[in-house]
Image 1 (tube, helix red, strand yellow):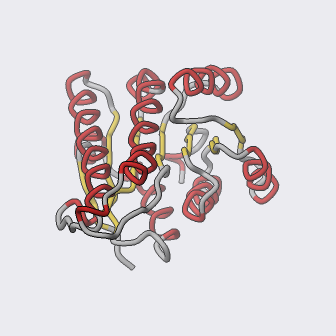
Image 2: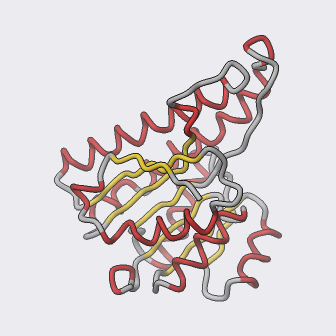
Image 3: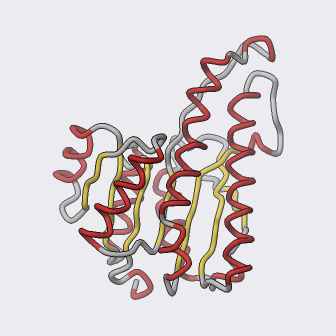
Length: 217
């Protein structure tokens, strides 16, 4: 995969099963991979499991921590060509009355992290000759349920943010693309997601930018 040779890809929320699969596929494709998580022990495990990845611990919901992360990444590997945002989680049930503030605040962390990370690495993505940013969203954005209202609201906000990034790329003339993958459930689709991330460079940025793709088995 010459398209990925020496490209720097940062995976946010990299210690999940999907993060591991994406990191492995990107390494195999020739990318330089920075794996970011909030648990230092799990980052070290991932570094041992996948020799060649570059581990960084950061609280992605803390804007200052993300800015410090960006400085460390720039010092270690240079500018970032791609961000794969896999920070997420699920809480739901109980219908509308059961959509608690506690659950919403936990779920909202993924959107907060996306905002911080995409802003911190915006200049990198715009300057790259092949900038990419991708998130995993949910098919419930098209078919919301009462029991998943908090979860779907956060996913919808994340998709809206991605569309704003896409418009920003187009307006700036950057050869960059913002892409959303939707899944009904990510479990069992980790390898499919990994392959789809690697394939992001097989399509020109203008055609890829502001696209939504549903992943199925």
